[in-house]
Length: 399
Image (cartoon, rainbow, N blue to C red; front, side):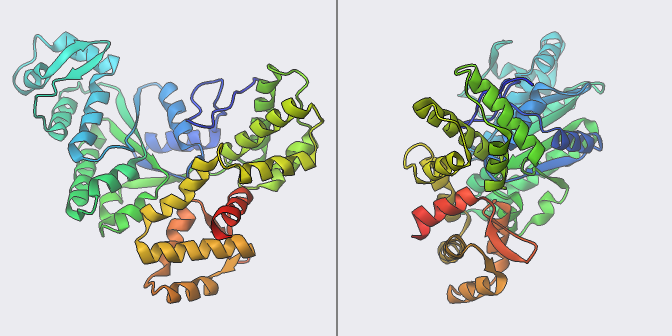
């Protein structure tokens, strides 16, 4: 078993960081081969970006896979400029145009001439040139040969781009969704597909625009938490990575099992921060790791006001991004109640929604469930997915 090093602040990119998610990878490739456009649905730090990075580094034969995060994109033209760059900065496509440049005519020659510094080092587009990048993307795609590899765009944080572009102008957001759908539809049979992902629910964002029809050609694939075997392997391989720094560092199987049972929402981020804290505590004390050590590091994670503050605070600030004022207050009251009492049934939620004059409680519960705050258990009561997030919320928000 090969060691892994932690990757808590960014996507786990590389064989020394990424634990293969074989089930989800297989599902994605199966749908790609059925010519589907996909949405990876999962909350933050569930490993979506890491999966996408792995797909980019390990394309199957006949596929050209390109990754791009568009979280900061805030205009339609900027979005398609990113797509345009991905196309032209690929060696395979660049080589095709380099060879065919002298023979290019008309529109093809026109858009190639707009590029400065045409080289394998990258594409520099003249900033003085006013370019409709949606139009240019279509021209470029139409000029690729029929036997060219299928192009797969992995578009990370796509719902954020939709939200940024909409920016209180619903018609702009709708127009953007129409354009991206047209691109999918026009070139799907010509070797172009998209895999989107994002921590904000795309359906929740688009539903507010009243145009769910614009994403009904996208198939959802859920990125589930790690199963116990995967999580145990991750703990073991991370511990092996730390053993290279301190060879007597060990996490026994009973301690691993206790860790996994302590927080059953086994997303990679929580597993990594617990192992990281165990290692730091071991460095400081050189004492054997026990079940009580797990309790100690979880308490530290919850109460630490510096190391993990940004991550946990984002769970609260995202509510303000997702909801209007009264919806936000209602969602906050629901989460405060659950963090204090441990669980909550729908009737109690409904009573809170009535107090806040909410017309459709389902809109709120959909966001809270999709974005990973809560879920229903077998008794149809709502609980926090993660005991760590629950305790942090109780300590820093509800109290």
